[in-house]
Each structure stands twice: as C-alpha cells, then as structure tokens.
Amino acid sequence: MNFESLGLRPELLRALAAAGYTTPTPIQVKAIPDVLAGRDLMASAQTGTGKTAAFALPLLHLLKASGEKAAPKNVRVLVLVPTRELAAQVLASVQRYGDELRLSSAAIYGGVSERPQIAAAAKGLDVLIATPGRLLDLMQQHAVSLSAVRHLVLDEADRMLDMGFLPSIKRILGKLPRQRQTLMFSATFAPELRDLAASMLHQPAQVDVSPRNSTAVTVEHRVHLVDDARKRDALLHLLHAEPRQTLVFSRTKHGADKVVRFLDSYGLRSAALHGNKSQNARTRALDGFKAGTIQILVATDIASRGIDIKELPAVINFDLPNVPEDYVHRIGRTGRAGASGLAISLVGREDQSHLKGIERLLKQPLKREPLGEYCLPERIAPEAQKVRQPQRSQRPPREAGRQGHPAARPSQSPRGQGRPQQRSGPRQNSGRPGAR
Image 1 (tube, rainbow, N blue to C red):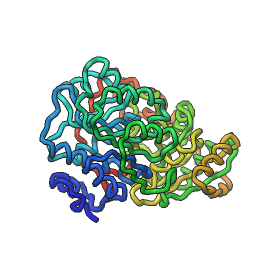
Image 2: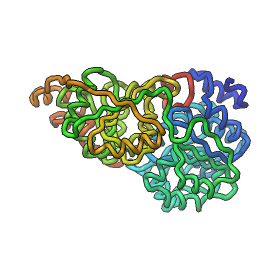
Image 3: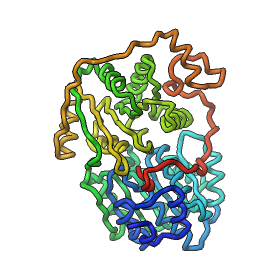
Image 4: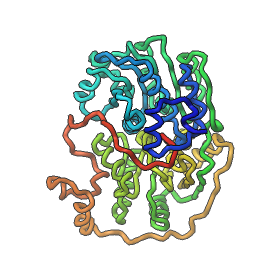
C-alpha cells in the first residue's frame, strides 16, 4: 500500500515525497482512514511506529478541506502532550507535512517565556500542540480559547497520567465542545487509561498494531547483573568497549548528573536531560545529541519523551524504572521504524524486584549475560579537563572558565528568551514518516 491509496490531499503527498517517505506504517494504514471518516479513535502502537503521522496527516487534510480559518485566540485542532520535547517534535512534524497547506501552528509549554506563546495564540491557530500545565495557565489569562476546537488528540496519554496530569486534562476537557473528534494514542493502555477513554470517546474505532505493553521485535534485550557499587564502572566498560551514540536512563535527576560528571572525567562527551534543566539547557543537550557532538545522553523518564534520533543504536538502563511500563517507553527510543536496536540493563540488587515486574509485563524473561572483567580507560586529570571544556562547549566567554561539561550543569540563561518553535527544516528519515 502507498500513501496515495489512503486518500490524502496532493499537497500532503508532495510533502511526504519530498521528505523521502514512501510506505505507510501499519498504524498509519489502520488509523488514517478512520480519522478521515471523522471517527473517534483509540490507538495502541509501540513507540517508533509512526503515531504522529497517523493523526497529523489526516487532521491536516480535514483542516484544509473545511476551508475555515481559526478566529483570534481560537484553536481548531488541539494536541495534548506530556513534555516540552514531544511538543517540539510534534510541531516539527505538523509543519513538515503541512508545508504547502498554509495552516497556522504553534507549540506552547513551560520553561520558556509566555509572551511569544500568547502572541501566537492571539492570531488564532489551526493546530496547537500544548502541555496541559502551560495551556491551563494561558486559558486562565484568557489568552487562548478552546470553544472552537473540532479535533482533540491525546498523544502519549499513558505518560500524561503517569505524570499526574489527569486533573488538568479533565479541566481542559470541560472547556471543549461536546461535538468534536477525539483521538487517543498511546504505547501502553493501563486499566485507568481505558476508563478515561471510555469517558471521553464516542464509539471509537480501536487500532492495535502490536501486542499490548510489548517492545519492538527488532530490539535485542540484554541484562548484566552487577554490584550496585560498581554500576558506573560497568557502564563505562560498556561505553568504552563499543563506542557508539547511546541513550542512558537514570531513575533520578541527581543520579543523571552524577553519571555525566563521571563519564566526563573519562573524556566521554556526555550531557544530562531532566526536569531540573532549563528549557534552553535541555534543547542544547538534545540538539547536541542529535548532531553527534554529544556521544552519551543521560536522561530521566520524564525528559525522555520526544527524543527522536534516527537509528539510535543502543539504550542502556543504568537504573531500571520503578514502573514496568516505562521500560517499554525507554526501549522504544531504539529499534525504531524497523531498524535494529540494543537495550542493555545494568541490574544490581536494588533492581531485582523491578526486573521481575518488567518480565511479568512482557511475559518473557530477559537474557542474562555476564560482563566479565571490566576494561576501563584512564581518567582525565582535572587540569586537562579545564583545558578541554571551553573547546567542547563553545560557550560565551563569561562561562568559559567553569568546570564540568556545559550540558551537565544548570543553565544560566536568562528567563524570557524562549520562543514558540517555528518551522523545522527537513531531516533525514528511514522512509516512513513520523516514526517515534
């Protein structure tokens, strides 16, 4: 099947062709016709299978076909997402696919100044991508109205519930018209999420392109049993033995910063990504990772959504997540869109109960492999690190003398410099759109 057979507008087909996308993924094949038909939708698919395009393409088609325009402060399509990074990623996809449609779009989220976001909303928006907290802030200021929303999307709905956004979502739902199309996309569907879906969806079509709470078959899983006291040595051994771009998951923000400082002392270009970082610092770390100037990105679960790296070869769980479903989301960062991936977990005594919970969720044991003797590089002397840092960070002179990797320390950027993200240029892809 090709995209022409799905009945999408010529402008969308040209945008897909220009981006090099040729074949729709299974979630797109099943979801796009239902969305075009105006049905509510409850879709479950592993992350990295193209969920964004599955709702963005048909909704852009419907917006253009209606011939309407958004009135000032009004919104026609509202997409709710859990994190800033995911908001930016969805906006980039919407603008890429709708390049020829002349539709307005913006993303609003916390961590940056409200002023540019309020200015964008004041003109009226065909598509608004928002995190629940910042959206409620702007609604209370009467900067944006949801009375004209015709299409609502909850993306990564399970993560929004995990992050405690359910009360905010219910407040937002109370401001939406009853007559609307509602789409819910998620990698996992816990019972409480299905209860929410039952309360807000009307006779939804159900799309499930993979076993619930499963990981991609293209991902190889490895478990290394290690002493808790030697976890960092084990991580360094793995990164040194097979140098490659790697996403490392830490359970806590403090733990992520400690891992970055440790890796940096051995000369590995690393950065931390977590909720205590300013938006500017998070953007710098993620952009550096995507560009390849940062080799190791150490992230917490909250910050991990929206990390969309083409052909990311490996993910390492320095700590296993407290919630078994989060393992599915972490592992979904590798092995995307049919590519092969590797998921490694360092399991100490404190992680044993979490490992059992993950194996129960996946209904399969994860392969254990011994690590053997650790092969560690030499530590870089602090004096050498001081010399190296300004060359790597390329910071302004006022910060050049500080120690530690620039992306691993709290940002000193002044508040109020953020802007709603604008059109992003084309990026390399795997031949399938929106894989995340």
